[in-house]
Amino acid sequence: MEEMTDTEKSYEAYRRYLAMKMHFTNPTYSFHKTHGLAKASIKAFQKRKDKYFFYKLSHIPDYMEHMLAHFVKNPKTWVKTIVDDKSVHEEWKGRMRRAQYLFEEELNLIPDGIVAQFIVNKGQHPPALKLLLGGHVSLETMVYLDIVGNFTDHWMKEFKVVDDFTGVQTTQLILDYKPFMTVNVDNLKKSFRKRMNRNK
Image (tube, helix red, strand yellow):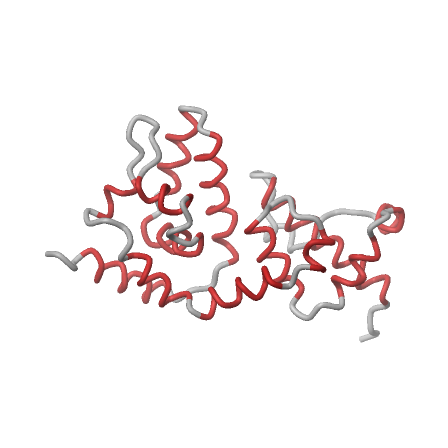
């Protein structure tokens, strides 16, 4: 198979960047359903003043991970930021390496009666969401908890009723991040059951 030219690599990185950005900013768009490639012409790409940064992006090993780390932190992040700021990816990799451990540790920060901590009562933010917004619990842990307990349907419904922008946006971020996560679901369920049974 003939090797791609630098222009082709840059163009592909551009399309993947667009696809991931739309995934995290447009609730109706799916990165995975479009195979991670947004529709965009090479002509439109070549007219962009920032195309050099897509050249640089295409030469970063595992640049898809770099993009994911940045979009999870800021769904509207610019390509130059992804290229220039490597610390976001390093922090993300650190969380991924300790994902199971962090999940178990952060589960302990959620008060007893764990299921009740996710209930939206009269439009108020539930304790679990407050922990996330306060930086006490990671987004990854919330994604894992949704994999186990599927609370986001309840959150989205309730927050839309009261037109809670923060609640809706945060819930959508959890939903957008979820398809990118690879995790041993049995281990998550085991840890969750252990936490549920702690004070029985």
